[in-house]
Image (cartoon, rainbow, N blue to C red):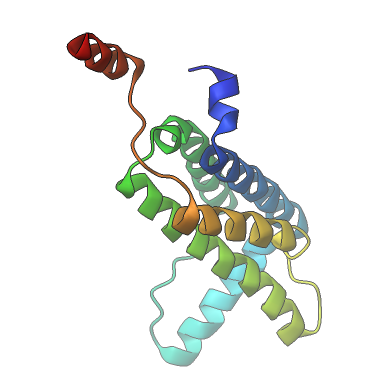
Length: 158
């Protein structure tokens, strides 16, 4: 895969920017103590409601799972370059989740009258998620032909 061709695709650029922002966001959360805040919040809600389906995590499991998810996202870049409706839908869904995540940190900071863990990187995550969402709806996600398919189709017309 040629890097010039890869970076000429705006969908790919938006995808890569989102995963770079997500990596920055996870670092922000890890450094500013998001996990203890999250686990405490889940336990408080469970105590009040008697049941709450959100899990609590140890630091290693939480961070390891997020790192694996980010690596899988970067690894899926060739799928984004190829295009198609499935990866387009994945991009839109992922964008919506990241918008909700970023807004949760920002609105939560307003609600609690303090900057919550992860809030520093949330504007970057929000912006990149909005860009990917835009390309998810407006970008060209037609499946790109592979070089082999192109050469076969041109040979058939000769």
